[in-house]
Length: 293
Image 1: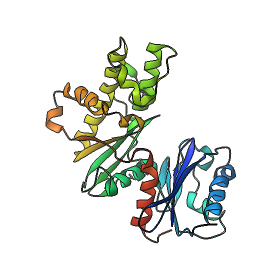
Image 2: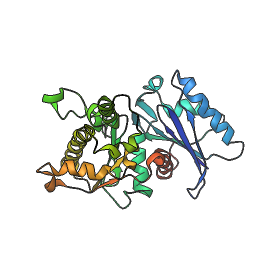
Image 3: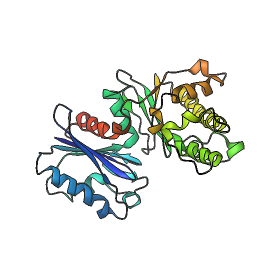
């Protein structure tokens, strides 16, 4: 059995897979961020509980931040501050009774692996995966390989500055994320609450049309810049909002306003695996990395 963990700021999702790649069990535990020990304790408890029934042969980790997947170090660990600069594979291994091969990769890169091996990027050598959520993230695949960058920061699209004269150094995290869209929605609607996946159902309401149009403009700028820089075969879009069928047409409408888009146009498609992408990507990480610890 392979145990795959997708570490997020709120929850750690997990899946146990048999040798045929089929789910045996899945679930989630709360992410503890107070200290290193607090973070690893529920993971170790989960592994001990699973080992009562199953034999784990390898562990895969989808992890936020700048991840050196060759050494296991989290150069930067996102919202899990106690793990900055720590070797995640070593820290976990020394807390376990048994020794397992442990593999780790950045969460967006894991999502790209999931789409490449069993999702909407199959038989695609070069593509970009863009995630729209609390922030803006992503992954770059060139000639079938993840482009991590010299400092493991490849795919940090949300840190782009694209509108300096209007917004100074505000990044695309603050302009193109789903959080940015929802913040502007609440500014217009007051205390109204709506799930992000349903926000486009209100696109014809006064004020909301402008909010969505302005947001899609920033997303379109990002996609255009990625296309002219990387020339991918396609761009995949993930995040909870990508489950809304109206997302792609709204972004494409914004892109069509760019007079240069027709020269650099590439297909836009949503990710297939959505919330399971990190766990599935960790599984593919185990399968592709073999026995390397």
